[in-house]
Image 1 (spheres, rainbow, N blue to C red):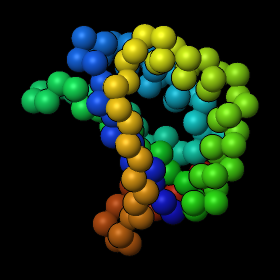
Image 2 (cartoon, rainbow, N blue to C red):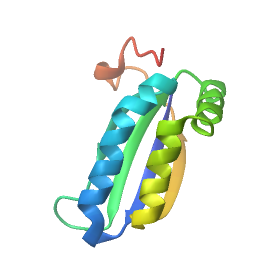
Image 3 (cartoon, rainbow, N blue to C red):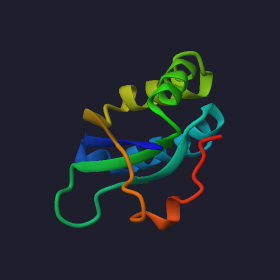
Length: 112
């Protein structure tokens, strides 16, 4: 299993729009082959950093998912929403692997 860790820099005045954007992914991501672990918006402290974690069985599975994103009408609509609202200022992706025995809530994980 790999986890795509996404770090967003968002416009602090558009936090509600970011939350709308994140909620839309809750239906899209699983349908396209990812396992949404969660989106996280600023609460206290830094007001412009948000995160998302999405699990995949492998990097190859992630690539298949990315291909599906490019043609999915709901995904394209959500990307257009974020762009139109100018919610996301910067986005970074890092791929992580869980260290065995340290993530009991991910045991038996499958992105299918």
